[in-house]
Length: 423
Image 1 (tube, rainbow, N blue to C red):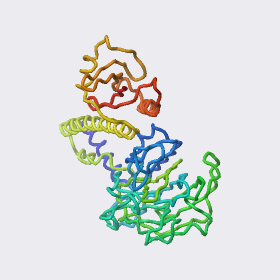
Image 2 (tube, rainbow, N blue to C red; image 1 turned 90 degrees about the horizontal axis):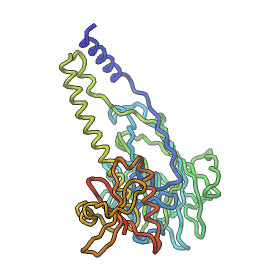
Image 3 (cartoon, rainbow, N blue to C red; image 1 turned 90 degrees about the vertical axis):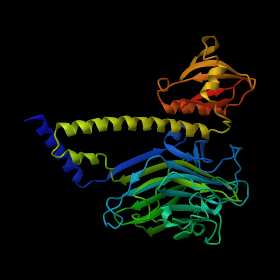
């Protein structure tokens, strides 16, 4: 049998595989305690940060460059999921998910807490502008209630707005902070942000894509590092919900929160996420191979090689963007330097200025004449960095250290990569 005939057979098999009904795949993620390595896994929208082994969805007290009042933030898993097949009018099964997490919403002193924390299914990773106060990092005064928001959230609200039942409730929000359904938690013996103490709650948010409903369960955990209590039998909130046509077909999971004139710390300490999702189409071009000969295949292979190069390049850019986001989220990083400035400061990285060699690269002495600033410069490359996690962990530790005999961390960008700079 000739090569062209073999290729035609492979093409036919690929077409049949493409046309076959897709089965749901299962994603499982278990996260926490949290540290700087998670900046490569999550999209952390400032002023949200990762510190003190938690997702600080709004600023924590360790970050004084942010006012605690009138803030909003988001932390999302940096991976999207396909939640259904076909059109929005189809009656087919929708993907299911189970999200469980440990939260600590801390009231500062005996002040009135505000505003709230939410678990969110959203179409993108972006934090809406001016989404502080009552908007919980979900919407703002312009967008609230718009069907184009394409989001669903479960809120844990600690401040009573005129549309809220009270200042201690859970709610189901669809494209708006005006909840479709709410449950007051006080009669259930649950207080999200009690005065004078830290209280830890395990939350389960479960969505059934076959029967199309969402349920929320809450149980108190005695200590931060204590055993996880069993999920209660009865949900605190249950509501019919068809995600198809409400959220985007491709959506993200994560958390948002806000403070207003009243403030609180919105912390997520652990997060487990299981999603039964539809696999994305990876080879839509396979069908064109049906009946194709060698010339067509050659053209396809050339196009695939070009696409592979493009994808690899984009992945490297994404990798650098992750490092950029992580470094810019480090408290106190004051400025960036151009590579030409660094080159001049180190006399073109003269060997005479070499101070030593450590993790991830070589260290040089440098001097910025204009600022009269002595610095130590660590040069690294992709070959030096075997893992972003280790690199980011080192930077986070250095950034948080303060001592008269230790240099302070600055940041510089070089050829799309980041190099640590100390002064």
